[in-house]
Length: 494
Ligand SMILES: [Zn+2]
Image (tube, rainbow, N blue to C red; front, side):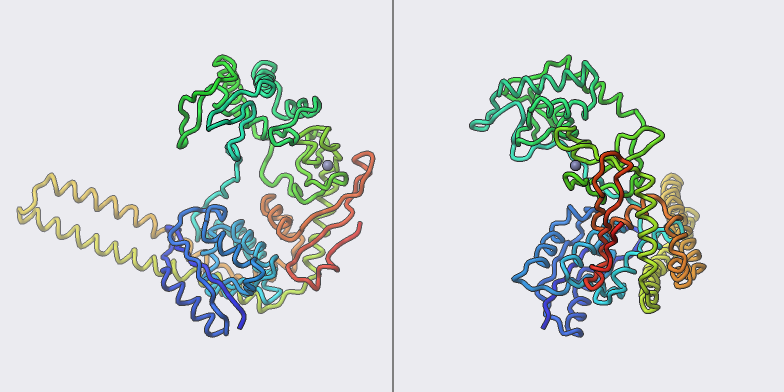
C-alpha cells in the first residue's frame, strides 16, 4: 500500500471556527483507510501561532520526512488548505515544495488532489482569483507575509574584527582597522552600503568567511553593538569585557545617519520588478534583480554585481520593459495553450463553498450570544427595580454588556456582508471567463500578484550574452507547470 503522512494544526484565524485537532486526525485516518493508504505518521503542530511556514517546526519535520527517499512517502495529507497556510504565498510555497518532490498533496476538505494534473495548475490560479476577490471574501484575516529579514545575527559566533578564545573576544587588529574604516566611510564620508562593499572588494579584502562583501554584510557591521563593547544576551545588550573598536561619537553619528536615511522613500516597490530572481545572469548564472536604473531607463542587473561590485561580476544589464513584455506575453500564451477541464472548476467552486460554512456557523453562534446579552440586560434592570442591585454596579454592568454587544454587532455585520457578496459571485462563470480572457485577466492583476504567478510557474529565464544591454535578449524560459510530460515542450527558445 502507498505510504502517507498527515499534518494537523489549529488555525489561529479569529474569524473562523476551528475543526479540532482530533477531528482533523480522524478525517485523515479515514481518508487513508478509504483510499488504501498506509498512514505512517501525523505531524501535529498544535496551536502554533507562527504565521509563516519557516517557523513551524512540525511542518519542517513533515517536509523532510516527505522528501526522505528511504521512507518512500507518496502522499502528504492535510485536512484543509488553510491548515497548511493562512495566506496564498505560504500555501503556494508548500504546494510547490511538495509537488516538486513528486509527492501528492491532498487537502481533504478542499477536494484538492494533485494526482489530477489540472488540479495542480488550477489550485494556484484559483488562489490568485480568490486573491483578486479579496475585498469580497475576507475569510482570512489579512496579514502580510513576514519578510525574511536578515536580522544581523552572526552564525557560529564569528564576529569580524575579533576572534574568540575561551569564550572571550580578542581583537584582530587588521580586521578592527577595516571595521573602523567601514564606520568612517558610512558615518563621516556618507558612503552607502553598496559603495563600501564594492570598495572593500576592490581592495581585495574579504569577509570573515572569505566571501565578497555585500550590502547586508556591511549593514551587519554597522549595526552591531559588539563594536562599542556590548554583547547581545537574551535579546538585550549588556556590557561585555572585550575591547571596543568604535568610539561613541562615531557610533552615534552612524546610527543617526541610518535613522535619517530610513526616512528616504523606499526605492523598491513590491512587485515592481516581477522578474527579479527569475532572470539569470548570462555570465555567472546568479539571479538578476532590480538594477540601479536611471529614471528614463530601467534595467535588471546581476545580483552579484549589485551586492558586491564589479569584482564579483559585471552588471550585465537587461532592459526591464523589453524583458517583461517578452516574458508576460509568452506566459499568457503558454497558459492559454493548456486545456482546463470543467471538473477542476467544479472542485474549486466546492472548495470555496466549503469556506462559507464555518462563517455561517460562526454567525449563528454570535446571534445566539446577542440574544443572551439582551436577556441579561432585562434581568439586571429587574434587579435594580427590585432594589437588589445598586445603581453604581448597574451602570458598570450595563456598560460592559453594551460594549460586548457593540463588538458583536460589528462582527456580525462584517460576516453578513461577506456572505452577501459571496452569494453574488458566480464563481465558475468567473473562472471560465478568467481563462478565456487570460491575457486581460493577467494585465488586471496587481504587480505583486503577477510576480507571484510568474514565480510559481517559471523556474528561470536565461538570457543571451551581449556586449550592451541592447544585445541581451531572452534566450529560454523554463516553465514548471508541475507535470513532467510537458516539461520539454514548455521551454521556449527566443
Ligand atoms: Zn553575474
